[in-house]
Length: 464
Length: 162
Image (cartoon, rainbow over all chains, first blue to last red; front, side, top):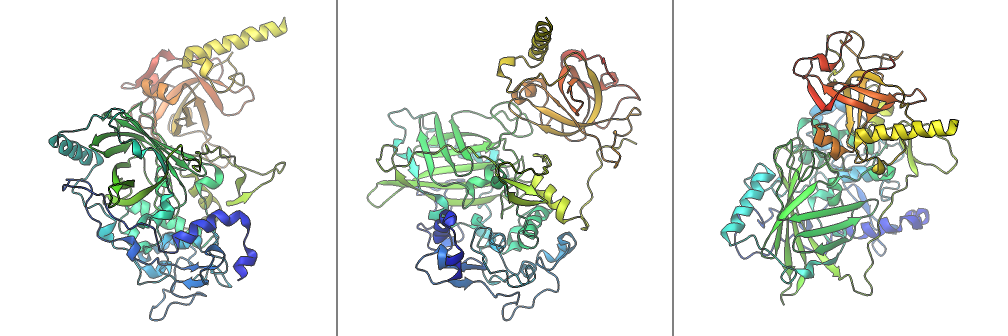
């Protein structure tokens, strides 16, 4: 129980998260929306339920982070040894001095020692689960995940026939019109029971985007070449150089896809009115989704938008009601990163559908949240995330915790390319980051990739 | 009297900013760091547009006199300047945005540079965007290039300093 002795109370919150996230006992199955008709573009069944799958590892289960659960290794093998029956590669993510040169190996799970991207992130202790898992000569002695574990691609890609979010939204709108909608709610008819607080979806759902269920090459097979490189680049600096560059550690913007990350948003606070639905969530930053009911996008620019031609960190969202289902389209999103998950571009758009869940007695229990991502610069096919948001409180419940608005005050700075907590009065050398030029990658480039053969950059300065 | 003169200059500077960005009372920082008495005019290559809601900024590498490349430091790296202007939504209405000024865009702008000599300034006067990958003739600016796009209604500012 060395982990217990080394554990710190400051990590208690993370411990609580992992109690559920690694237990593989998500409270809810991945049921899709409860519907009484077959839609053209929502509520289609999933090809596989993540609850039926085991994470790849390598990680630990139990111990300090899961009180009452025996501490056990979850993965293929430890100490850098390959699992029985698996022939290791001569060169992999943990022994390579230049991952760019290894591109032809990226399609082989063994290059990543069968670790998922979230497992790789954890190995050096990023989420406080990886203590001692790296062996006595890291990174060469990094452990192996289970090579046989993988969530199917068919359950990740969108099942719908649409190539763009606009096409998808318009088909759903047309379908709703054919059903007599869109529904024009008033304060008397709007589904007011939606208003309230919903449980932390990362704790109450298992889904592929936690990035714990897939082999790296499975995700890579769905990415464009450029974003494959970015995805492996981050994995390398998580698993090999141990130089994670997470946005929230520097109080940088979280970015749109962090809404779906396992840890970035906790409870969701919904406020429902006839012409505006607002969702507030967050931990290190505030995520505010304003769904403008009945508005239309200006589609004349590079991407559809509501306001001026200015990318918004969390996009702009329009929507309409089909009865008590809310169908939304988000666009004009600032491209950015997640971590242990692919980056997203400023071309990304989503279709998100909120459909009420009811128990057998007909009581409202929460919302099915189905999201389809359209980002042709990143994903070669649209992908889908299905989760269920469980309502836990009304705002006037005496035990409801009010939303805490977050002001992130930076205390961790990059020093020699590594995130380092600094104290007041301490003087450090600090380079101002180019916030719109993948600043995280700049640190990797400057401090850890000097001798690598990187893709050539376009020369924009010469007019010879 | 010196104080009053300075005050007048400061007010004048503020009014100049007001004319530029239209909403000085919404400025989120003082513009007193800029030398409002003088104007420098640059033609440069965009490296980044920061669409800050309060004051959009364009980062750029000033071009050399021949307009064949950019000015560089002793290590051969491009020298980077920035020019700030109105809020990102306001500037988008004028045609200045991340999408309309991608990396590599050649443009010309006048600015009140920082008093301390660092490489930044606040925009003064009109702005001109050259046609794609078409810099002006040596020593000239984008307002001289056929097919250039004018931003705002004012002409390119006249330089009082090199």
